[in-house]
Length: 461
Image (cartoon, rainbow, N blue to C red; front, side, top):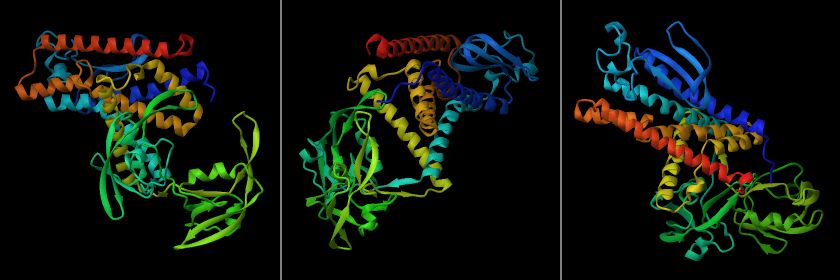
């Protein structure tokens, strides 16, 4: 298990995640408001008492406040929670009132409000698109190579060699399409359609529930199909590969190792690691023909389970799980949007499961857990940390779009009602709705914060 990062690292990483994302969110509101001619009285990072700030030439007060758990833009004319002061009671001249938020057309007000969550969505899209452009896209045929012990897929009737073509009616083109249909549904039944011997058949599979623990000890329940897709097909070699020296070639399918039939690449390392330096027969299938090779197992130093360095057998073969396809900039952006919306879909699924009791409310996290995960991901390197920033950014977009009064989604709901009624809701009604929504959000924040505290080791979590 990896040691948890220190307190200072955690605080720094948390501020490095939340600070820029809050700034970006509020800048979305501010810039679109400014484009439509709305004056901003204040732009605050954090809530509560001002710590420091300055006033620009447009009269906007830019400030840093004491509670760093969000931020806000106060537009001119925001005299109450509904952003709708009574005409003649704001003390403004007609020229000044023309630059207030509440006098703008409905569509402009809606765009100003929507701009905050949209910027957070675009940050996530940009990060995921950048990863796709830099790293390419993994393509792996969803053909079953082997099964795990006590596999629910095997118990349901799936067989090695089956190709999964759809799950619950959604087409599956690559192994990478499968996790979103499986991971979030422990103890639930899914409909798996496979192609076998030229025919398709649909088979219901009741997913197993598996407790997954990461390198920091964080646990989560995930759905498990119990299927291995790592076909033992050679895709390349590493270093001074003993397998390549013995005549193995890219594209070879390993079918036997030391007399034992092989169906999955995952079966090979446990057989090779204990026998460095030994010469063994390995049978490969090449262009429909089998060929026996005599391979002397190489050796490599690695860390053992006890933390000590050990010498392990090594073939120097890259194999088993698809190929990486280069991605152009336009396709990368498309993948960025697709993956961002997939993450949003998983959030909706998680909320539904908590509401109906399929998942524990203990899985809900607040600022303390975000800070904890921020430090952990920061300690793993910039790529992991940047991916975590993308995840939090799309979370902020999703949460702010919920139709809860007081959040951006609540304001958009009011505007939708105004569009249907052809007149706004009453100011008093909006004020009470927003106060109720804010109370609900504060209660939820208190709950998840207590949830976070209880999960800390100091409290026995």
